Image (cartoon, rainbow, N blue to C red; front, side, top):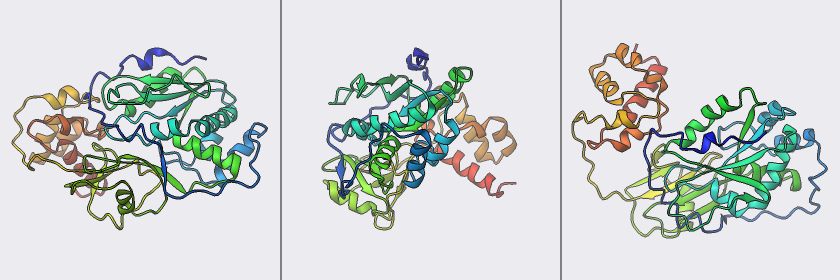
Length: 352
């Protein structure tokens, strides 16, 4: 079964085209904050059975960064399915390269993990997915890693959030597929070959205040301030964001915030613009870019009127919090932020 090209032809025409700003972090080697002791008796992984591979993932307590699920659980569900194995190294938000960077820098380990996962599925069809529009990259993305093909996904941000929707349609009647993270594959290889538990996470440390941007492999529980010290500050940031610049969360508590399994990035950013906001001018840009086809302008109007029935009728539940509407708004309205706040209150039963 071959991966159809339909997914790579710019399916995601709605959204925004973002400057990626992944350099120089992407082209640098992955910095390991603590070195792991090499295994005394490395295991030969080629002869491992599917059950042994799953048990290795379970013992290592590997969590897949794509969805936060235990990797062993995902492998067990897909065992002997014969479906397509797709490896997520997309990283379509600016600055972030915490999947693509380790996949390229530790390609032998990543490819080894992919082969192990493919063995569990009983498939020979594996593909690594990366984002196409990285014009600033000093790294030439290869066509394969250790014989495993790399395919580029085109289209506007948020391409990554729509990949599973498209794949579900394409592969519903073709044996299915399993989407796993590139970093989870690295950890799978280490677990199988060395019996090493997942005690680290790959994090991009970047932003216009960071002196030496790079991808870091940090022990879980490391204070965020230590990653910033490692890479250095050249300017005092106005914001420190954990996660992507569009979907991440700002923090001021750098000493108590710690690296977790899904901490994709630590971004130290200085904004030159004043924190201003104008009234909505009705330009409709938010509606034009919304990948879900919603009308954020109307939703925001009804939210501020307190008309929750109209808000629900406008499809607020379909919002995927990609932040395209807030990003494109010339009046700097926090459209996505107000929708998120509304949904959290509804979930807590505070707006009934």
